[in-house]
Length: 282
Ligand SMILES: C[S@@+](CC[C@H](N)C(=O)[O-])C[C@H]1O[C@@H](n2cnc3c(N)ncnc32)[C@H](O)[C@@H]1O
Image 1 (spheres, protein in one colour):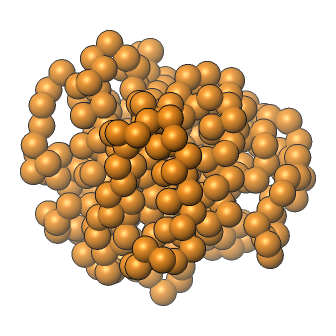
Image 2: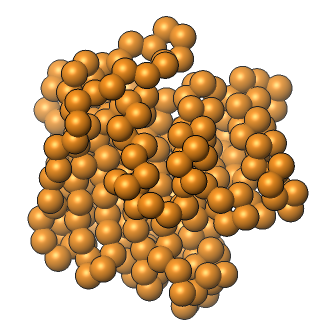
């Protein structure tokens, strides 16, 4: 198990980014056919491919957490879940990092959209074979946050599975408010070591994600680093309040947990203001 400084992680991740000159092509981003343009608004579309500085990003922190968890549990298969994967910019950095530095891993990516073709090709290049696609059962409507309109209608949940030896990359294509997407079996039957919530930036969505993972035994407060993107600047706001509720629930079974607020660059690097990123760690 290699020990890497944050500086080395940053260097490795910038190399990963440099391998991908274009993350998404306009005709693969436009809506329709995409549901929500992969959450990448038109006014920042031109920023997604710009080179990033060596200031730390969320991807760098997530890799650091993965490495720390791997060092603490050297015989475990490291399990990562990203809720909201978009074009795969953060996810590819995690996938390439895991392939290089983690002895054994399972990475799960979840999004409403179909896998971005560029991201799918990058995962295929890290894998032994093209993905196996499984059609899931039909959409089951659940309780939505107020005002939420599901863009998926009756489209079934689908999973896309790539293998690299015994290591796995799985892309779960579906709505996080469709209970099928949270099946314990398709999510790998064991708790995650690192969770990154970055889909619908809405407090009810955060609470829903945690409650689905918790009810299925997929988060163990003694063993997980649970992260949130796009919290507000100030801790008395609704996203923070949801994150604190989750923290409180986890702390009830592990009083050693703490929650840290980072102001850190995200998928567009220094080309947009830093994001408020929260991490619950023990
Ligand atoms: C900000 S982007 C994720 C960025 C990505 N984590 C990164 O850093 O590279 C948010 C993503 O969440 C997805 N999303 C939004 N609502 C969702 C829902 N109800 N279920 C699943 N995914 C959703 C969007 O399709 C979009 O791709």
